[in-house]
Image (cartoon, rainbow, N blue to C red; front, side, top):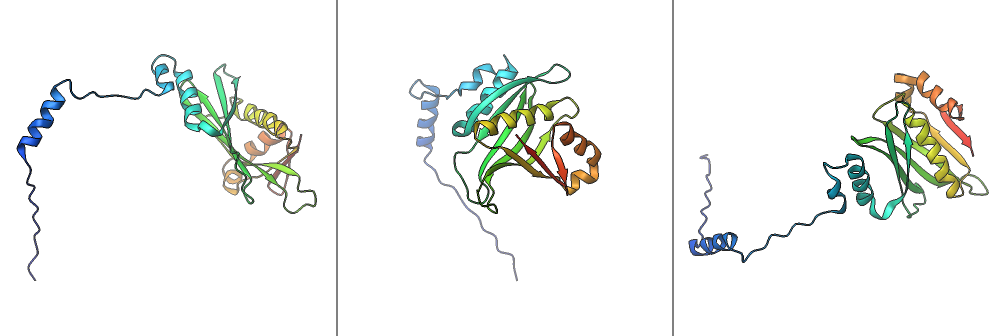
Length: 195
């Protein structure tokens, strides 16, 4: 069977193209650009640029920030994002973003939930994951302290979480030490802390 060939021919009115070219070359057409609020800091103050960009992108979920110093003296901003929407299964999702003058330094993901299996339905925070870009500089411990401040503001008294089997396999000793030094109890690959 012979192969079919399809050809498309574009017919256009050259006078219309010439008219458009004249508009671009004249003052009839004005090009407007929208400058976002954080762009004024670009290449001037990187830390302020990344911080304001994060707050702008989070918009309605932005709920606070805190500045801390790492062990090596770097200034890091924690920007908290907490949803107002409550999902019956997943609760209110939140993230703490770690921002430095170099940009993203990591994240801590959490969720405020109600204990569906207890009689009093007491709320708790579940730590979903901590993803730092650098380790052993104190950023994770500071992030946990900030999370504790956030949950106190939200009338939550307990923190829970699961230790990932993959993380335990790859760096279990360091992970267990990290949570224990920050006051967490570890039982059956789960973490617990009451505030």
